[in-house]
Length: 454
Image 1 (tube, rainbow, N blue to C red):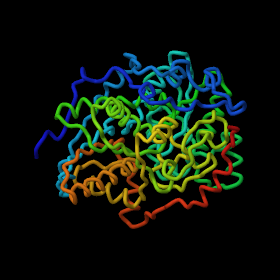
Image 2 (image 1 turned 120 degrees about the horizontal axis):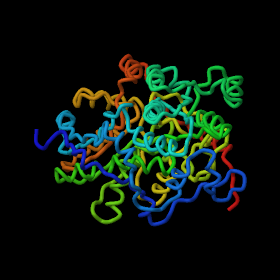
Image 3 (image 1 turned 90 degrees about the vertical axis):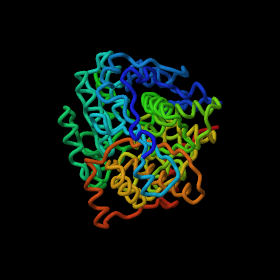
Image 4 (image 1 turned 45 degrees about the vertical axis):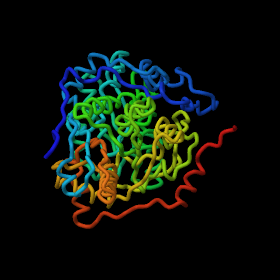
């Protein structure tokens, strides 16, 4: 079979610092703005939502942040995670490409999300926070935060988009096992949720709506804070342990990637894998093409506008400069629930605007077709989210077959799909339909985006 299929790091080799890509960018990203004054948001503006340590990480340009020992102790339950060479997929595709995937499905929650859930909960625990509220799409983030809260004795309340709440019932069960209280969103728990349900009792929900409901609950009680699973700088920072490990693992087999692909919804999985490699690219140590892959039904980078917008539907958060489809945009209820977000992480958006990464979108039937190929060759059933990156990886591998180039392709398999089997069942029975976002829908939703004075 050639090189080692499973590349492992010893526990002692696990990185002990997170990497902040802002330190190495040619220009810093635009700051978040206060929604009322439209001036750069200060630390005090974020204090009702986040503990001081996370606010500092959100705003810093320091290159490396030490990972607290208490966080490392929990990380050691599953980290370092394995890097696999996809020999069987390569054989199936008859490609000269060498395909590697970093597998984050080995975490207790089955995805990459605990990489940030654990430190977020720990920092909140150090400031005496009683409870954390949050949103979740597919349930990967909600279950990860519930797991992390159980480790440090904090209560957890979660709003899950109604479409995913209904289609992925066992994610709710997993959150409840770890002590989380879970509501479908929009919910009857908040005034905003009740308003939306009155307008549409069958509202599918969205991550933006769920964020609004979770934020409302957090700001009303000084003993409660809010935790976000993607989008913000400190979240992407925590995820860079993925890429730092992958760099070490590829070095063990003498490889550097020619192409790096990652699925993008809010940006944490993509940023976690790619930012350490972007550092090496900016330093001239390697030159991979780095590509974001998003759903055609929610294409923020490829069809959204780069401008200031709210991170939530109700307009409660600071304004963030990001690629957006409009904060009132309601994505179609695709099965990749974790990618149903109207905006892209400001940091990923900024790097895309600088021309340092590329972006493409994929239809969901192509994603499921790629997932079936992957599962039947590599044996792992992927979550719907990373199937976007798998589809793009397979496309690149096919191009290598046509050209005869022996390129190294790296991707992140950010979670398993064991609790997403109803989606696979629908695909196998021919019920999955492609949803390609019409320009008219974007034009309409963008009307709600604030127009700021230059």
